[in-house]
Structure formats: C-alpha cells, structure tokens
Image 1: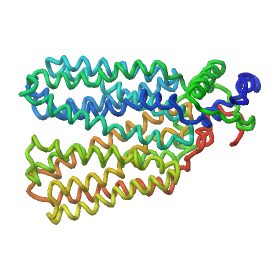
Image 2: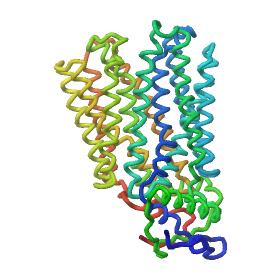
Image 3: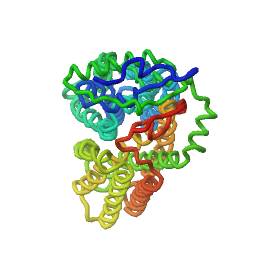
Length: 489
C-alpha cells in the first residue's frame, strides 16, 4: 500500500492551494488489468476512425444516391471538416468539464452520426450526419489522448499511446475486409451493403461505451480543478483495483508531492502565451510533426489506388487487395517500435522513424521513375516506409499531449490536430493532379521526393527542438499552470 494517506495527499497547503501525491501515485503503478481496460475502452477511437474512412472511401452509397465523383468527394471532405470542428469544440470542453464526460459524449455523438447516416436517402441527409460522425471522432482525438496520457504510468506512456494511435490501421483493415463482402451484390443487395457498413462502427461503439462507464475521471484533472477529495477517492479506487489484480504498490515519498492552486479554466490569451512565448520550441516541434505526417499520409493513402490503376494497370476492383499489406505494415510499426520511444528516447526515435520513412520513400521515388517497379514491389516499398512512418505519426500525437500543461492539454491536441488536417487536405488534390492520366511518371516522382524531404525535415526539427519526455512524470515534462511548488522525483 502507498504510504500516503488521504490527508497527506490532499491537505491544504495554504489558502486556495492543494498539496498532492496523486501524480506520483499514478506513475508508480504496475501494469494490471485496470490499464488494459483503459487501452481497450479508450483506444477504440482510432479503430473507429480507420473503419469510417474505409467504409466511406469505398463509396458504395454513390449508386443508391446517384452521386457524382465530386459529390462523393464532398462526403469525405464533410467528414474531415466535422473532425476539425469537433476536435476544437470538444477539446475546449474536455479541459473545462473533464476527460470522462467528454469521452462518453464524443462516442455518443459518433454513434448517432454514423448510425443515422446509414439511413440516408439523399445527399444533404448524408452530409449532415457524416459531419456529426466526424465531429464525434474529432472530439475523441482530443479527449482520449489527454485521458490516456494522464492515466497511464510514465514508464509505459510512450509505447501505449503510440500503439493505440497505430490501431487506426486495424480499423482501416476491418473496413476494407468488410467492403469486400458488403459491396458484393451477390451477397448483399446494392442498397443495403453500404448501409450495414455504416452500422458496424456504432455496434462496436455500443459495446465500448459500456466499458467506458467504468473508466474513472483523470485524478490529475480533478486536482487542478479544485476537486481534491474526489481526486483522492478516485486514486484510492484505482489503487484498490490494481491490488485486486495482483499489483504490488511501492511507497511514495513525500518529496514527490506537488502543490497546486486550482484554476477553473484557462483564458485563450493565456493559451497563446503558453504556446508562443513560454514554449515556442515545443509549438514548432508539434506543428512540424503533425503537419509533415499528415501531408505524407494523405498524399499516399488517398491516391495509392490511382497509382496502381494508372501506372501498373491494376483493375479498380483489385486495388483493395494491395491495401491489406499496406495497412498491416502501418499497424505493426507502432506495436513493434513503440517501446523504443520509452527505452531509447523520444527525440532519437522520432528522428529515426521520420527519417527512415522519408529515405525509403525517396529511394522508391527513383525506382518508380526508372520504371523498375511493379505493383507488388511498389506496395512493398510503401509497407516498409509506413512501418516507420506510422510509429512516427503516432508519436506526433504523443508529443502534443505530453509536452503542454495539463490544464490546456486537450485544447492543444485539438489545435495541432486541426492544423494537420488543414495542411493534409491539400495533399490528395495535389498528388491526384501529379498522377494525371498516368502518361508521365515525372510529376509524381517529384511529388514523392517532396513528400520524403518534408517527412525528413519533420524528424530533424523534432530531434533539434524536441523534448526528452521518456519515463518522466507529466508534471516534470510540463509544469501545470496551477503549480505553486513541486517535489522532484
């Protein structure tokens, strides 16, 4: 048992202040069933996003609703716009109202949006509920990343966050596999297959929303908002669940306590000051990492089918088969490399993953231009490049989450996520134009070189200006805005 009693952990340290051992108590917890419940209950957000993108990209609804290619594109764009708006709004709410309320609310919003979209009878109806579904998923990114990092012990934080972000590709693979059956008119009627696809996510979500009811509010958030007794009750309950699962708790030294003066909310002017005056290097690093990975991913992911069709003569209905190894490579990368971000360090691994993905893509660009690749070898190069890129992209979300103060963590995630989406949205249109009718490899080769160089630059910026956050308490990586004094571990 911990040596810190409730009174020691939350006794007032002065007028309007609270002295707490909660961060230290959370970080010294061994890995148990409780932490797996967080991974499963909260990590599903990325699986759902990957699933949604694949279901919509297959555009099985186009024939039923008589949509043109431009209108199909508008459906995808509307979903992405919803993500941006949802991320900004629900991220703001998460910092004000708490993580738990929001990761329940955002999942409910997604369930409603995606579920009702399956009943679409016209374009306008589909657009409204695709926007709502996107808003829910965008809100998930902000609320979930902050909750995960605040509940997972510092020793495991990097690998867990990176692995969870990488599960997007598990969802994408599920969506692709489902489309093979759902969009086959010999198995499902044309008007029903795509509708069932829209309902897969909500069915999964109904199960997950039940699991989330048992995930507690972040005790870290509670103490910074003046709810010390509730924070004490929550951390006591977490420790009891850990011990019930066979975990052994080490004593916590009083020197590890922090003293806070709770604040209700952070004004926008203060947020601007934190981002651009107090932590300009961290802001530069976060922006560079998020923008570069988003640009590269959208450039390749949204145009890989066009490349296979126009340059390798792969029939449209066969391109999906090449997606599976691409998705699996993206899924395995964070799972295999994630622990190295804790063991070797953030900056070194970010530089390595961003750099290696860029170098592999650069080599493939020259082979592509020389005409020595076929569809299989092109896909192999993509798999290798994104094995590294996926781990790097996942670490971008980790970097944003852990390097800014707790009181504005969810909002910081939403700002950088939105920035990445805006720049990433340029890539599909640009690379689609570079592909053209497939008569010349030159323009796309230049595009691949640009994408590779951009990714490498992102890694270099992170290596120079990044933060060594591995195995450190969040409060030592970035001091809370409400901090009065702190014990150091």
